[in-house]
Length: 513
Image (tube, rainbow, N blue to C red; front, side, top):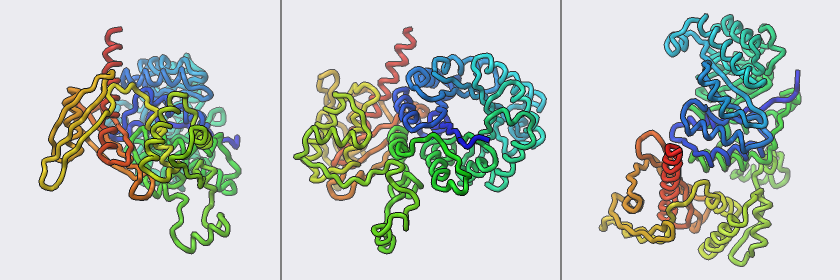
């Protein structure tokens, strides 16, 4: 059996199903490119039949992202499979991933199909997909609650029909590690033809066991693990791929020297990018990528680490891309030093992006004495806009206090024209948003707002992330940074509005075609 464990990333499909997450095409492409740099083997770019937007996003990823297999998800019917193929057909390596539920509870209450009908649909779907591509993955949804004899029958039939990957999902996070490992071992031993395919697992985290279950499956014969960056996904999320990868590396002794093709030094950057674009912040104590993952506050711990890092660190932070640079930049730092620092941090910017980022850096340096890598990273990420900036903040004036009705006067630029409006609100942020709405003519509802300090100190950059909607269904995430919290809020709101405007223009153009 191969020692290689393949990493199947579903951040752009299952991860995007996290409540409140909605990525546009540009954001999906940027994440997909970073996933390719990370070295994942398969990117599940979306569910093409689900919407025209998702179809276009999957097709764009398939066309533009190289060096990785691109998969599209499809239910076990011909319409879904044909649509998935249309989306992924231009990929260097294309995969169709088709699925159908096999548990009694799903068949009776969701599908309203008999076992015979499900078996027939699974075989027909795999054969249809096989007619398009040699790389076909079949998933038995809710496998962990499926009667084993029937599951084995469906898997064997899918293999006979031409499936090359068999995925065993713990769809609702019901399994526990010992039971799950034994289950996978039985499948690998009992199902006819299983030695001809790659066995995969897709574990959810409802009981907090997704990573543990994935690792138990690998120990017992699975050679593909499906999950998402930062563990995002439906409900409590998926297996966090960065945790699976680093567990396999760190505990080679336990996992029989199994390995992945992941470039671990790209893990932290990938985590940050996904967090930024989805608006889902990573908890501080999150394993591998949380801010506290390599922090030591206890005096005993600090003393131990200073004498010998491995006393309290089982992983080298640099291995996952966490920078420990002590280089501090300030207002006297030049463009060359700034460019070199960006290169050291792994950023490859266009000349225009570099110029804008440097300009932002110099402005920040006038307000903040010491600028850290985290500050620089925040500046660069904000400047790498993925949609046209229809509106940009020109100026703002806020009046607020305990005895004053909060009022905001906002000036925006649109095609070099200055637009100004004033509005009152329940608070200064509400007033800002109302003034922007008056300028744009778009009435948005803010469904979440949050702020994080990028670095410590009174002069820290504030990083505001918010989500807006106009219809209660499509959600747009905005991000803004500034040493002024209200300015950061205004930038974040305008950023989200620009995404909304751009998507509306794209939809209108598509209708015109």
